[in-house]
Image 1 (cartoon, rainbow, N blue to C red):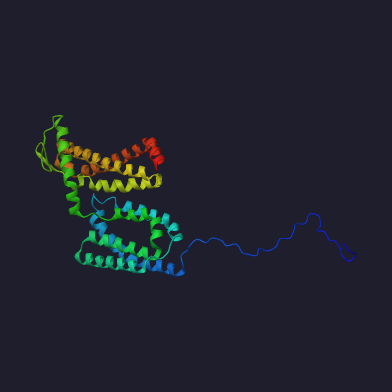
Image 2: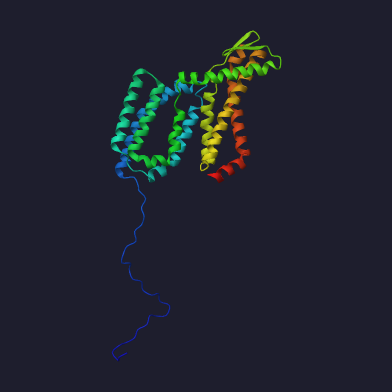
Length: 313
């Protein structure tokens, strides 16, 4: 060290100087919705309201006012809640879908909606409305975002009324079996009952096993409530959810069998007027309540089965 060189030392306790980073660190950014997409979703919401509100009014008049479709408003509220719950995930994964395929699907569904309006079929109108909304959602957020919310999107199908002819054709074999087993069961206890097709003869009264007692409508309502329950509690256990769905179908059939038994006994003891009046509705509510309690009891007792299926998954 020369005489001209002066050694300097940092003061005691001072922190060493840090050099600025030569290369800025890149931060991972999640894809977010652009301003154009937000305006597009606003336009989508306005157009959806123009499609949804008149159709929902028609569904309420045709389906929700009947015993078969009384579950509709509850299912609609659940579906909206499920969709809103997944909306942040949809926004985070939103990328516009294929303009060609999305526009083609939307145009076809919109044409079908117009035809259904002219024909006056609420079943076709509601199905076309659902298809148009799904196509429009695909155009704005894409397939990846929709895949993240597949259950809420599919759950809206429970809101749509099923075709009456399909319900009658699908439930007729089940109605025949239910009426046959109900008559055979009550005959064991000495009740004067007989059957001819879907007509049950109770003493001097005649009771018809209609589509409401066939099980399909209760299967739809119980499946909607039960699958919502399974999705919230056991979303990751797909195997158990499938088993749970089969239990729902079985409980719906058993509950409708019990409902027919109750209506036959009401007819025998209180007359046909009581069976077709308030007590008829009461039997339906009792059936639904008993089925839901049975489903919840099964879920509570099926812990070992659920764990075993989760281990295999």
